Each structure stands twice: as structure tokens, then as C-alpha cells.
Image 1 (spheres, rainbow, N blue to C red):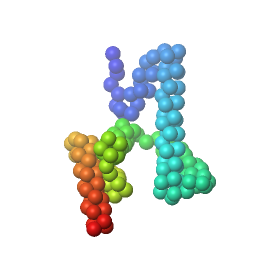
Image 2: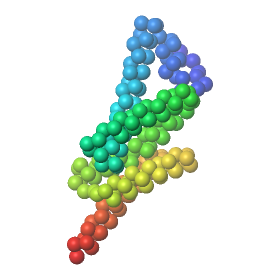
Image 3: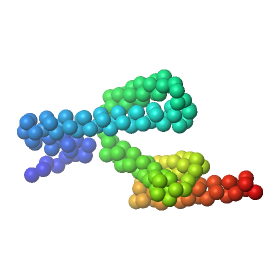
Image 4: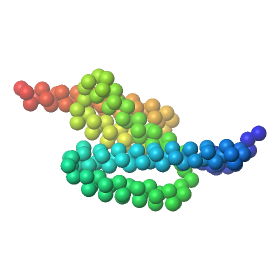
Length: 168
């Protein structure tokens, strides 16, 4: 029923091609709108994080707006290259995003963590996610999550240890 597709990045195109236009057009538009909305949300979030958290500019919005334009241009340039590795890219991005899970768990549910734990978890976990993905490690997302979780607890423990020394 379903033809063999040589390139797995074109599966959706093949599925939509087998449907009638009255169904394929709304589905294709929905996919496009979802992708644009997701990219928009990511760009706005990155701009806010850079402006408010990294550069600590809460009153001046010009840098955030400039960063939005730069990121949007980078996304457009990336899309013009028509990459054929979107499946690998989406798996890699989910593996890298896995390092945020220990932060959410620790900060919001366990009520622990610090800047040191956050930096160690994000930088170290992100680097390991890229390394595991590059090496093609089996269960790389699981290993990334476990490593990031360990880094979070190590960072939180180091912060408590350092805070105890400052108080003494």
C-alpha cells in the first residue's frame, strides 16, 4: 500500500501526495504553520534568554530585537541549504534538549540547584549529548539524561560545599 521511500525525510511528502488535494492542502498548511510557530517561539525564547539572563539588559530591548533578526536570517539561510538530514537533526536536538530535564526536576520539584549546577548541567550535558551523537552511541539519549542528572547533583553539591566554606 505504501511505496518504498528512498529518502526518509520525504515520507510526509509521499503521504500527502497520495491524498486528495482537499485533504493534503490543509494538512500541509498545518505542518508549515506548526513549524513556523515552533521556530518563532524558539527564536523569541532565545532572544529573551540572551537579553535578560546573559546580558542582563532588562530595559533595553534593541539588542533582543537585533538578535531576533539575526536568528531569523540564520534560519532562512539554513532552510535555503535544503538539508537532507532532518531526521538526524531532530533526534540530535531532542538529545541536546534532554539536558534541561534535570534542571526542571531539581529546580522546581526538588527545590535545589544553583547557577553552578545549571551551567555544569547545560554545558557538560550538552557537550556529552553532542559527543554521544557524534560517536553514534547506543541509547545516547538515556546516557545523556543520566550524565546531565549526575552533573546537576554534582553542581548542586559543590555549590552547597562552597556556600558552607564561605559561611565558616
